[in-house]
Length: 82
Image (cartoon, rainbow, N blue to C red):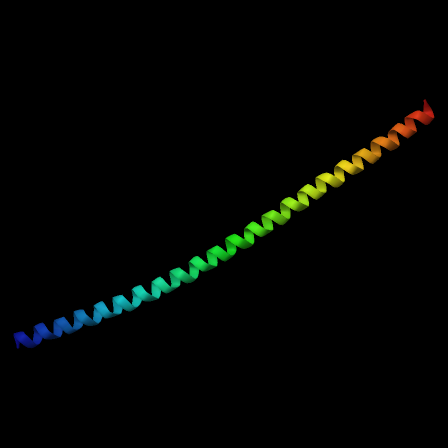
């Protein structure tokens, strides 16, 4: 019976090792999926940051032009009253 018991324990160990290998493979696949998702999100974030920076630059340019026009209008107004 000792021999049967040892063989049963080896079978159980073999089954547990097989389960661990399956779990490791599943975790590796999940890790790859998550890594791909992170890369996609990083690319999306980079694009959004670039768009936001472009909008900020456009806003600053528009503000500068408006300030310039207002300054010209003030100069015209000052020349008429002066």
